[in-house]
Image 1: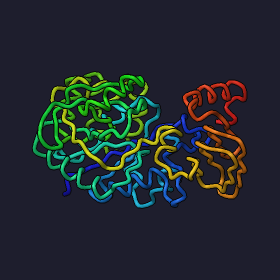
Image 2: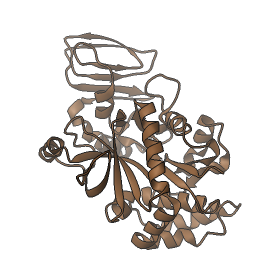
Image 3: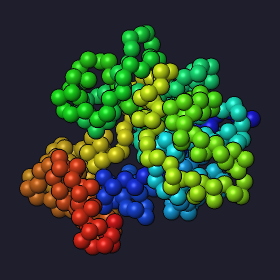
Image 4: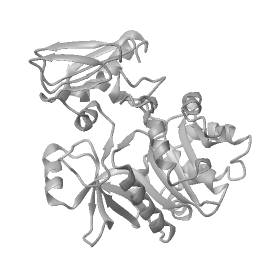
Length: 357
C-alpha cells in the first residue's frame, strides 16, 4: 500500500473574487484561464503525479459535493469529506487525518489549498518528493516557503534560521505585514512567503493536535470507530458545529517547536485576489490584462478586464481599473481599491437579499 496521501482543501467561498466567484460556484471550481480545467482540477492533476488517485481526499462544504464529483469523476464519493459548517483549516485537517488514521497508521500527508497556481510544476514535484522523504524520516512539521519576488502585503511570511541548503528550521511566522514591513522582509533575505502547503507524517500531526489543540483532537477522536462507515457523516454533522473556528497556522504551526520550511522557487501564486491574478497574467504594451473576452483599448493602461468569452469590451481613457462581469453582475472599481470588494458583497447582500451573491 502506498503511504502517501494528499488532502485538498476546497471549501472556501472566495468572496474577494466576486463577481466571478459566487456562493454556488466559488473560484476553485472556475476555469480562469480558458484551459478547460478549473483550479481544483489543476490542483488534483498536480498532486496525482506523486499520490495515488485513491489516496487523494477533497475536504469541502456539503453544498459543493455534486460539483466536486462532476469535476473529478475519477474519484470515489467516499474521497469527498463534507463539512456541514465552515470552521477554518484546523478542524478541516483534523477530520482528514482521522479519516486517514482509520485506514492506516503509517501515512505521509500533503495538505494544500485548491486555488493556488504553480507554473513550474516539474520543480514542484521535485520539492514534494524531497519533502515527503524528509517527513517520512523525521517527526517534524514541514511547510513550503516561497522566495519573495516583491514586497507583497497579501501573504504571510516565514522567517528562517540560518543554514545551508533549502531546508531550514522556522524562526517565526508573521501575518500579512504592512507595506513598510513587507519591504524590510523582502530586503533581508531571511523571510519567505508562507504558501499554506504542508507536509507531515500521520503520527507527528496527530501528536501536535493532541498537544496544541486538544479540544479539537478529542472531538474528532471520539469517532475513531465510525470513520469509513455509513455513520461517519452523521457523526461529523453532530460535532462540527461545536468545533472552534481556528486555522492550522495559528493553532499549531505558529506554536509547535518542530516546524521546518522547505524553501522553493516553483512559480507559486495564491490566487486570492484580482490583484494576484493581474500580477501573474500576461499584459499588453500598456500593462492591460484581458481574461477570456476580447478587448479594444484606447488611451488606457494598467487595467484588468474579465468578461464572458463572447463579449467585446471597448475601453477608452481608463487607467488602473478592474472591470469584471459574470452572470448578472458587472463590477467596475479601482484596481488598488479591490480590498473593498468584500464591502461591496456585504452591501449587495443587504440591499438585494443575496440575489447577486
